[in-house]
Image (tube, rainbow, N blue to C red; front, side):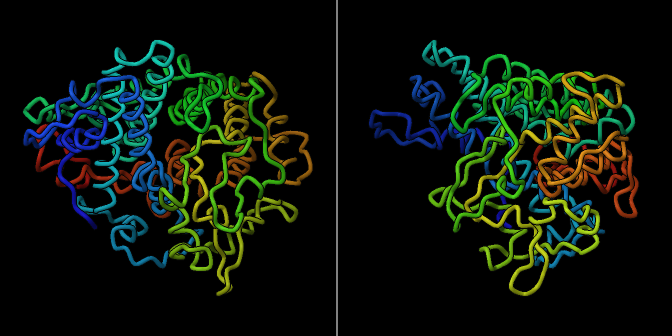
Length: 453
Protein backbone atom coordinates (compact mmCIF):
# COMPACT_ATOMS: atom_id res chain seq x y z
CA UNK A 1 0.00 0.00 0.00
CA UNK A 2 1.10 3.54 -0.69
CA UNK A 3 2.30 5.29 2.46
CA UNK A 4 1.39 8.84 3.48
CA UNK A 5 2.63 11.32 6.06
CA UNK A 6 0.67 12.14 9.26
CA UNK A 7 -2.66 13.94 9.22
CA UNK A 8 -1.56 17.22 10.68
CA UNK A 9 0.57 18.07 7.68
CA UNK A 10 -2.30 17.65 5.23
CA UNK A 11 -2.81 21.41 5.24
CA UNK A 12 0.21 21.54 2.95
CA UNK A 13 -1.39 19.21 0.42
CA UNK A 14 -4.66 21.08 0.76
CA UNK A 15 -2.88 24.33 0.03
CA UNK A 16 -1.36 22.79 -3.07
CA UNK A 17 -4.78 21.58 -4.16
CA UNK A 18 -5.98 25.16 -3.98
CA UNK A 19 -3.20 26.72 -6.05
CA UNK A 20 -5.38 26.58 -9.15
CA UNK A 21 -7.73 29.06 -7.46
CA UNK A 22 -5.10 31.84 -7.61
CA UNK A 23 -5.78 33.58 -10.90
CA UNK A 24 -2.58 35.71 -10.97
CA UNK A 25 0.76 34.37 -12.09
CA UNK A 26 3.32 34.46 -9.26
CA UNK A 27 6.86 33.60 -10.25
CA UNK A 28 8.26 33.71 -6.71
CA UNK A 29 9.53 30.30 -5.57
CA UNK A 30 7.35 28.77 -2.87
CA UNK A 31 6.47 25.45 -1.30
CA UNK A 32 2.99 26.35 -0.10
CA UNK A 33 0.38 29.05 -0.61
CA UNK A 34 -1.03 30.99 2.28
CA UNK A 35 -4.76 30.56 2.76
CA UNK A 36 -5.41 34.30 2.35
CA UNK A 37 -3.85 34.06 -1.12
CA UNK A 38 -5.48 30.80 -2.18
CA UNK A 39 -9.13 31.51 -1.30
CA UNK A 40 -10.03 34.97 -2.51
CA UNK A 41 -13.53 34.85 -3.98
CA UNK A 42 -16.87 33.11 -3.65
CA UNK A 43 -15.86 30.92 -6.58
CA UNK A 44 -12.72 29.89 -4.70
CA UNK A 45 -14.81 28.90 -1.68
CA UNK A 46 -17.05 26.81 -3.93
CA UNK A 47 -14.01 25.14 -5.52
CA UNK A 48 -12.73 24.31 -2.03
CA UNK A 49 -16.11 22.81 -1.20
CA UNK A 50 -15.97 20.63 -4.30
CA UNK A 51 -12.53 19.55 -3.09
CA UNK A 52 -14.08 18.50 0.22
CA UNK A 53 -16.60 16.35 -1.66
CA UNK A 54 -13.71 14.88 -3.61
CA UNK A 55 -11.93 13.87 -0.39
CA UNK A 56 -15.20 12.54 1.06
CA UNK A 57 -15.67 10.32 -1.97
CA UNK A 58 -12.23 8.73 -1.90
CA UNK A 59 -12.20 4.94 -1.78
CA UNK A 60 -10.87 5.02 1.79
CA UNK A 61 -13.88 6.98 3.10
CA UNK A 62 -17.43 7.25 1.74
CA UNK A 63 -16.36 6.04 -1.69
CA UNK A 64 -16.48 2.55 -0.21
CA UNK A 65 -14.05 1.92 2.64
CA UNK A 66 -16.42 3.28 5.28
CA UNK A 67 -18.86 0.53 4.29
CA UNK A 68 -17.06 -2.59 3.13
CA UNK A 69 -14.25 -2.52 5.69
CA UNK A 70 -16.50 -2.79 8.78
CA UNK A 71 -18.54 -5.43 6.97
CA UNK A 72 -15.41 -7.48 6.33
CA UNK A 73 -14.87 -7.55 10.10
CA UNK A 74 -18.37 -8.92 10.77
CA UNK A 75 -19.54 -11.20 7.94
CA UNK A 76 -17.46 -14.33 8.42
CA UNK A 77 -20.57 -16.50 8.61
CA UNK A 78 -22.15 -15.25 5.37
CA UNK A 79 -19.25 -14.54 2.98
CA UNK A 80 -16.11 -16.23 1.79
CA UNK A 81 -13.15 -13.90 1.30
CA UNK A 82 -10.73 -14.75 -1.48
CA UNK A 83 -8.95 -11.42 -1.77
CA UNK A 84 -5.20 -11.06 -1.95
CA UNK A 85 -4.80 -7.75 -0.14
CA UNK A 86 -3.18 -8.73 3.14
CA UNK A 87 -4.48 -5.64 4.93
CA UNK A 88 -8.10 -6.53 4.09
CA UNK A 89 -7.50 -10.18 4.96
CA UNK A 90 -6.45 -8.97 8.41
CA UNK A 91 -9.88 -7.35 8.79
CA UNK A 92 -11.65 -10.56 7.83
CA UNK A 93 -9.57 -12.53 10.33
CA UNK A 94 -10.06 -9.79 12.97
CA UNK A 95 -6.30 -9.53 13.52
CA UNK A 96 -5.54 -5.96 12.45
CA UNK A 97 -2.03 -4.64 13.24
CA UNK A 98 -1.41 -0.97 13.97
CA UNK A 99 0.40 -0.48 10.64
CA UNK A 100 -2.49 -1.72 8.46
CA UNK A 101 -2.41 0.39 5.29
CA UNK A 102 -6.17 0.61 4.76
CA UNK A 103 -6.68 1.72 8.36
CA UNK A 104 -4.00 4.39 7.96
CA UNK A 105 -5.41 5.65 4.66
CA UNK A 106 -8.95 5.97 6.00
CA UNK A 107 -7.62 8.19 8.78
CA UNK A 108 -5.57 10.35 6.42
CA UNK A 109 -8.29 10.76 3.77
CA UNK A 110 -10.86 11.55 6.44
CA UNK A 111 -8.82 14.36 7.94
CA UNK A 112 -8.09 15.71 4.47
CA UNK A 113 -11.86 15.98 3.96
CA UNK A 114 -12.24 17.63 7.36
CA UNK A 115 -9.51 20.14 6.56
CA UNK A 116 -11.14 21.04 3.25
CA UNK A 117 -14.49 21.50 5.01
CA UNK A 118 -12.82 23.65 7.66
CA UNK A 119 -11.31 25.83 4.93
CA UNK A 120 -14.78 26.43 3.52
CA UNK A 121 -16.23 27.35 6.91
CA UNK A 122 -13.31 29.67 7.72
CA UNK A 123 -13.76 31.59 4.46
CA UNK A 124 -17.52 32.05 4.37
CA UNK A 125 -17.02 35.81 4.63
CA UNK A 126 -15.78 35.65 1.03
CA UNK A 127 -18.86 33.82 -0.24
CA UNK A 128 -21.79 35.56 -1.87
CA UNK A 129 -24.50 36.27 0.71
CA UNK A 130 -27.03 34.10 -1.10
CA UNK A 131 -24.63 31.13 -1.06
CA UNK A 132 -23.27 31.29 2.49
CA UNK A 133 -25.86 29.12 4.21
CA UNK A 134 -25.70 26.44 1.53
CA UNK A 135 -21.89 26.35 1.56
CA UNK A 136 -21.76 26.21 5.34
CA UNK A 137 -24.40 23.49 5.41
CA UNK A 138 -22.59 21.34 2.88
CA UNK A 139 -19.23 21.76 4.63
CA UNK A 140 -20.71 20.86 8.01
CA UNK A 141 -22.52 17.89 6.50
CA UNK A 142 -19.23 16.59 5.15
CA UNK A 143 -17.38 17.24 8.39
CA UNK A 144 -20.15 15.68 10.46
CA UNK A 145 -20.43 12.42 8.55
CA UNK A 146 -16.65 12.05 8.36
CA UNK A 147 -16.33 12.41 12.12
CA UNK A 148 -19.18 9.93 12.55
CA UNK A 149 -17.35 7.32 10.51
CA UNK A 150 -14.11 8.03 12.36
CA UNK A 151 -15.63 7.58 15.81
CA UNK A 152 -17.42 4.41 14.70
CA UNK A 153 -14.22 2.88 13.39
CA UNK A 154 -11.52 4.19 15.79
CA UNK A 155 -13.55 4.54 18.98
CA UNK A 156 -15.54 2.17 21.15
CA UNK A 157 -19.25 1.82 20.50
CA UNK A 158 -21.39 4.42 22.28
CA UNK A 159 -22.91 1.70 24.49
CA UNK A 160 -19.57 0.12 25.40
CA UNK A 161 -18.62 1.49 28.81
CA UNK A 162 -18.60 5.24 29.36
CA UNK A 163 -18.71 7.41 26.21
CA UNK A 164 -17.74 10.37 28.40
CA UNK A 165 -14.34 8.83 29.14
CA UNK A 166 -13.73 6.42 26.24
CA UNK A 167 -11.39 8.05 23.70
CA UNK A 168 -12.92 9.03 20.39
CA UNK A 169 -10.93 10.90 17.74
CA UNK A 170 -9.18 14.29 17.52
CA UNK A 171 -11.63 17.09 16.74
CA UNK A 172 -10.19 19.83 14.53
CA UNK A 173 -12.57 22.67 13.65
CA UNK A 174 -10.22 25.19 12.02
CA UNK A 175 -7.95 24.87 8.97
CA UNK A 176 -4.46 23.61 9.61
CA UNK A 177 -2.25 26.42 8.27
CA UNK A 178 1.14 25.56 9.73
CA UNK A 179 2.63 22.46 11.28
CA UNK A 180 3.67 23.04 14.87
CA UNK A 181 2.93 21.73 18.35
CA UNK A 182 -0.65 23.04 18.22
CA UNK A 183 -1.24 20.70 15.29
CA UNK A 184 -0.77 17.68 17.56
CA UNK A 185 -4.33 17.34 18.77
CA UNK A 186 -5.36 14.89 21.49
CA UNK A 187 -8.32 12.54 21.15
CA UNK A 188 -11.70 13.86 22.26
CA UNK A 189 -14.04 11.45 24.04
CA UNK A 190 -16.62 9.36 22.22
CA UNK A 191 -19.31 11.59 23.76
CA UNK A 192 -17.61 14.78 22.59
CA UNK A 193 -17.19 13.36 19.10
CA UNK A 194 -20.87 12.43 18.89
CA UNK A 195 -21.81 15.89 20.13
CA UNK A 196 -19.73 17.46 17.36
CA UNK A 197 -21.29 15.18 14.74
CA UNK A 198 -24.79 16.05 15.90
CA UNK A 199 -24.01 19.78 16.07
CA UNK A 200 -22.61 19.76 12.51
CA UNK A 201 -25.50 17.77 11.06
CA UNK A 202 -28.09 19.85 12.92
CA UNK A 203 -26.58 23.05 11.52
CA UNK A 204 -26.41 21.45 8.09
CA UNK A 205 -30.08 20.50 8.15
CA UNK A 206 -31.04 24.05 9.15
CA UNK A 207 -28.92 25.75 6.49
CA UNK A 208 -29.18 23.41 3.50
CA UNK A 209 -31.90 23.78 0.86
CA UNK A 210 -34.53 21.10 0.28
CA UNK A 211 -33.11 20.50 -3.22
CA UNK A 212 -29.44 20.77 -4.12
CA UNK A 213 -28.75 18.74 -7.26
CA UNK A 214 -26.74 15.65 -6.26
CA UNK A 215 -25.02 17.50 -3.40
CA UNK A 216 -26.12 17.24 0.22
CA UNK A 217 -29.51 18.76 1.04
CA UNK A 218 -31.42 19.20 4.29
CA UNK A 219 -32.85 15.68 4.07
CA UNK A 220 -29.38 14.20 3.58
CA UNK A 221 -28.47 15.80 6.91
CA UNK A 222 -31.70 14.73 8.63
CA UNK A 223 -31.23 11.17 7.38
CA UNK A 224 -27.69 11.00 8.70
CA UNK A 225 -28.88 12.44 12.01
CA UNK A 226 -31.41 9.61 12.22
CA UNK A 227 -28.60 7.09 11.71
CA UNK A 228 -26.38 8.77 14.30
CA UNK A 229 -29.14 8.92 16.91
CA UNK A 230 -30.03 5.27 16.32
CA UNK A 231 -26.41 4.21 16.80
CA UNK A 232 -26.32 6.31 19.97
CA UNK A 233 -29.50 4.70 21.30
CA UNK A 234 -31.43 7.99 21.30
CA UNK A 235 -34.65 6.61 19.85
CA UNK A 236 -36.74 9.74 20.36
CA UNK A 237 -34.48 11.86 18.20
CA UNK A 238 -33.89 9.01 15.74
CA UNK A 239 -37.62 8.68 15.11
CA UNK A 240 -38.04 12.44 14.81
CA UNK A 241 -35.22 12.84 12.28
CA UNK A 242 -36.39 9.91 10.17
CA UNK A 243 -39.93 11.26 10.29
CA UNK A 244 -38.79 14.66 9.00
CA UNK A 245 -37.40 12.96 5.91
CA UNK A 246 -40.39 10.70 5.27
CA UNK A 247 -43.07 13.31 5.93
CA UNK A 248 -41.44 15.79 3.53
CA UNK A 249 -42.62 13.56 0.64
CA UNK A 250 -39.57 14.56 -1.40
CA UNK A 251 -38.40 10.98 -1.92
CA UNK A 252 -40.05 7.69 -2.83
CA UNK A 253 -39.13 4.02 -2.76
CA UNK A 254 -37.97 2.72 -6.13
CA UNK A 255 -40.10 -0.17 -7.35
CA UNK A 256 -39.04 -2.89 -7.97
CA UNK A 257 -36.23 -3.12 -5.43
CA UNK A 258 -33.67 -4.12 -8.05
CA UNK A 259 -34.15 -0.78 -9.84
CA UNK A 260 -32.50 0.98 -6.91
CA UNK A 261 -29.26 -0.66 -8.12
CA UNK A 262 -29.31 -0.06 -11.90
CA UNK A 263 -26.81 -1.73 -14.18
CA UNK A 264 -27.13 0.00 -17.55
CA UNK A 265 -24.17 -1.36 -19.48
CA UNK A 266 -21.56 0.12 -17.15
CA UNK A 267 -22.30 3.85 -17.33
CA UNK A 268 -23.06 6.50 -14.75
CA UNK A 269 -26.68 6.80 -13.63
CA UNK A 270 -28.14 9.75 -11.74
CA UNK A 271 -29.47 9.35 -8.20
CA UNK A 272 -32.82 7.59 -7.91
CA UNK A 273 -35.90 8.98 -6.17
CA UNK A 274 -34.86 6.96 -3.11
CA UNK A 275 -31.33 8.29 -2.67
CA UNK A 276 -30.98 10.88 0.08
CA UNK A 277 -27.26 11.19 -0.63
CA UNK A 278 -24.84 9.29 -2.83
CA UNK A 279 -21.22 9.70 -3.87
CA UNK A 280 -21.24 10.35 -7.60
CA UNK A 281 -19.14 8.09 -9.81
CA UNK A 282 -18.51 8.73 -13.52
CA UNK A 283 -16.13 7.25 -16.09
CA UNK A 284 -14.20 10.53 -15.98
CA UNK A 285 -13.75 10.46 -12.19
CA UNK A 286 -12.95 6.82 -11.52
CA UNK A 287 -14.77 3.67 -10.51
CA UNK A 288 -17.05 2.48 -7.72
CA UNK A 289 -14.76 0.94 -5.10
CA UNK A 290 -17.62 -1.22 -3.80
CA UNK A 291 -17.67 -2.74 -7.29
CA UNK A 292 -13.95 -3.45 -6.96
CA UNK A 293 -14.38 -5.94 -4.14
CA UNK A 294 -17.94 -7.23 -4.50
CA UNK A 295 -18.22 -7.68 -8.28
CA UNK A 296 -16.53 -10.42 -10.24
CA UNK A 297 -14.44 -9.97 -13.37
CA UNK A 298 -17.71 -10.26 -15.32
CA UNK A 299 -18.53 -6.76 -14.05
CA UNK A 300 -15.01 -5.29 -13.86
CA UNK A 301 -14.44 -6.20 -10.20
CA UNK A 302 -11.85 -8.30 -8.39
CA UNK A 303 -14.38 -10.86 -7.16
CA UNK A 304 -12.91 -10.91 -3.65
CA UNK A 305 -16.22 -11.48 -1.86
CA UNK A 306 -18.42 -14.55 -2.37
CA UNK A 307 -21.86 -14.75 -0.72
CA UNK A 308 -22.73 -18.03 0.93
CA UNK A 309 -26.01 -19.80 0.21
CA UNK A 310 -26.98 -19.65 3.87
CA UNK A 311 -27.44 -15.88 3.59
CA UNK A 312 -29.92 -16.31 0.74
CA UNK A 313 -31.80 -18.80 2.91
CA UNK A 314 -32.69 -15.91 5.25
CA UNK A 315 -35.04 -14.44 2.61
CA UNK A 316 -38.67 -15.52 2.24
CA UNK A 317 -39.38 -17.44 -1.00
CA UNK A 318 -40.95 -14.47 -2.85
CA UNK A 319 -38.63 -11.76 -1.52
CA UNK A 320 -37.47 -9.73 -4.52
CA UNK A 321 -34.50 -8.43 -2.55
CA UNK A 322 -32.84 -11.81 -3.02
CA UNK A 323 -32.71 -11.10 -6.76
CA UNK A 324 -29.74 -8.74 -6.36
CA UNK A 325 -27.59 -11.72 -5.39
CA UNK A 326 -26.60 -13.28 -8.69
CA UNK A 327 -24.38 -16.01 -10.04
CA UNK A 328 -21.41 -14.97 -12.13
CA UNK A 329 -19.99 -16.91 -15.07
CA UNK A 330 -18.08 -19.14 -12.65
CA UNK A 331 -21.34 -20.07 -10.90
CA UNK A 332 -20.31 -18.07 -7.80
CA UNK A 333 -22.83 -15.97 -5.85
CA UNK A 334 -22.12 -12.23 -5.85
CA UNK A 335 -23.61 -9.07 -4.32
CA UNK A 336 -25.23 -7.60 -7.44
CA UNK A 337 -25.90 -4.24 -5.80
CA UNK A 338 -22.49 -3.10 -7.00
CA UNK A 339 -22.32 -4.61 -10.48
CA UNK A 340 -22.09 -1.21 -12.19
CA UNK A 341 -18.46 -0.10 -12.10
CA UNK A 342 -19.65 3.51 -12.53
CA UNK A 343 -22.65 3.24 -10.23
CA UNK A 344 -22.99 5.79 -7.46
CA UNK A 345 -22.02 4.76 -3.93
CA UNK A 346 -25.25 5.09 -1.97
CA UNK A 347 -24.58 6.64 1.41
CA UNK A 348 -28.17 6.81 2.65
CA UNK A 349 -31.58 6.10 1.16
CA UNK A 350 -35.25 6.40 2.09
CA UNK A 351 -35.78 2.75 3.00
CA UNK A 352 -33.42 3.18 5.94
CA UNK A 353 -35.63 5.99 7.26
CA UNK A 354 -38.69 3.72 7.38
CA UNK A 355 -36.64 1.08 9.20
CA UNK A 356 -35.21 3.57 11.71
CA UNK A 357 -38.62 5.09 12.41
CA UNK A 358 -40.16 1.63 12.83
CA UNK A 359 -37.49 0.46 15.27
CA UNK A 360 -37.42 3.68 17.26
CA UNK A 361 -41.23 3.86 17.53
CA UNK A 362 -41.39 0.22 18.55
CA UNK A 363 -38.83 0.67 21.30
CA UNK A 364 -40.61 3.81 22.55
CA UNK A 365 -44.11 2.40 22.25
CA UNK A 366 -45.07 5.35 20.03
CA UNK A 367 -46.35 5.84 16.51
CA UNK A 368 -44.75 9.08 15.34
CA UNK A 369 -45.69 9.45 11.67
CA UNK A 370 -46.90 5.84 11.39
CA UNK A 371 -47.04 2.63 13.37
CA UNK A 372 -44.02 0.31 13.26
CA UNK A 373 -46.16 -2.28 11.48
CA UNK A 374 -47.15 0.22 8.79
CA UNK A 375 -43.53 1.22 8.16
CA UNK A 376 -42.36 -2.40 7.95
CA UNK A 377 -45.17 -3.22 5.54
CA UNK A 378 -43.96 -0.38 3.31
CA UNK A 379 -40.62 -2.14 3.08
CA UNK A 380 -42.19 -5.59 2.62
CA UNK A 381 -44.63 -4.45 -0.07
CA UNK A 382 -41.82 -3.02 -2.16
CA UNK A 383 -40.01 -6.36 -1.76
CA UNK A 384 -43.04 -8.19 -3.16
CA UNK A 385 -44.04 -9.68 0.19
CA UNK A 386 -47.38 -9.86 1.97
CA UNK A 387 -48.20 -7.46 4.79
CA UNK A 388 -47.85 -8.62 8.37
CA UNK A 389 -50.45 -7.98 11.07
CA UNK A 390 -47.94 -7.24 13.82
CA UNK A 391 -44.20 -6.82 14.22
CA UNK A 392 -41.66 -7.62 16.90
CA UNK A 393 -38.25 -6.08 17.46
CA UNK A 394 -36.71 -9.22 15.97
CA UNK A 395 -38.82 -8.97 12.81
CA UNK A 396 -37.98 -5.27 12.40
CA UNK A 397 -34.27 -6.01 12.73
CA UNK A 398 -34.54 -8.85 10.22
CA UNK A 399 -36.11 -6.55 7.64
CA UNK A 400 -33.31 -4.06 8.29
CA UNK A 401 -30.65 -6.75 7.83
CA UNK A 402 -32.07 -7.96 4.52
CA UNK A 403 -32.95 -4.54 3.12
CA UNK A 404 -29.61 -2.84 3.81
CA UNK A 405 -27.22 -5.78 3.55
CA UNK A 406 -23.68 -4.85 2.45
CA UNK A 407 -24.55 -1.16 2.02
CA UNK A 408 -23.47 0.76 5.11
CA UNK A 409 -21.22 -1.33 7.30
CA UNK A 410 -24.33 -2.31 9.25
CA UNK A 411 -23.28 -5.90 9.92
CA UNK A 412 -20.65 -4.53 12.32
CA UNK A 413 -22.31 -1.32 13.53
CA UNK A 414 -25.67 -2.96 14.23
CA UNK A 415 -24.00 -5.83 16.06
CA UNK A 416 -22.28 -3.33 18.32
CA UNK A 417 -25.35 -1.25 19.14
CA UNK A 418 -27.43 -4.42 19.68
CA UNK A 419 -24.67 -6.01 21.78
CA UNK A 420 -24.49 -9.10 19.58
CA UNK A 421 -21.48 -11.33 19.12
CA UNK A 422 -19.48 -10.82 15.94
CA UNK A 423 -18.39 -14.32 15.01
CA UNK A 424 -16.55 -15.64 18.06
CA UNK A 425 -15.97 -12.15 19.47
CA UNK A 426 -18.23 -10.20 21.84
CA UNK A 427 -19.58 -6.90 20.51
CA UNK A 428 -17.13 -4.92 22.68
CA UNK A 429 -13.97 -6.78 21.72
CA UNK A 430 -10.98 -4.46 21.14
CA UNK A 431 -10.38 -6.41 17.94
CA UNK A 432 -13.52 -4.82 16.47
CA UNK A 433 -12.07 -1.31 16.79
CA UNK A 434 -9.47 0.02 14.36
CA UNK A 435 -6.09 0.89 15.86
CA UNK A 436 -4.91 4.47 15.71
CA UNK A 437 -2.44 4.24 12.80
CA UNK A 438 1.14 3.70 13.92
CA UNK A 439 2.44 6.56 11.82
CA UNK A 440 0.05 8.95 13.60
CA UNK A 441 1.14 7.68 17.03
CA UNK A 442 4.79 8.14 16.05
CA UNK A 443 4.17 11.67 14.78
CA UNK A 444 1.87 12.91 17.54
CA UNK A 445 2.83 12.17 21.12
CA UNK A 446 -0.59 13.41 22.30
CA UNK A 447 -2.40 10.51 20.64
CA UNK A 448 -3.17 7.46 22.75
CA UNK A 449 -3.47 4.00 21.23
CA UNK A 450 -6.59 1.84 21.45
CA UNK A 451 -6.79 -1.14 23.79
CA UNK A 452 -5.12 -4.26 22.45
CA UNK A 453 -2.69 -2.48 20.12
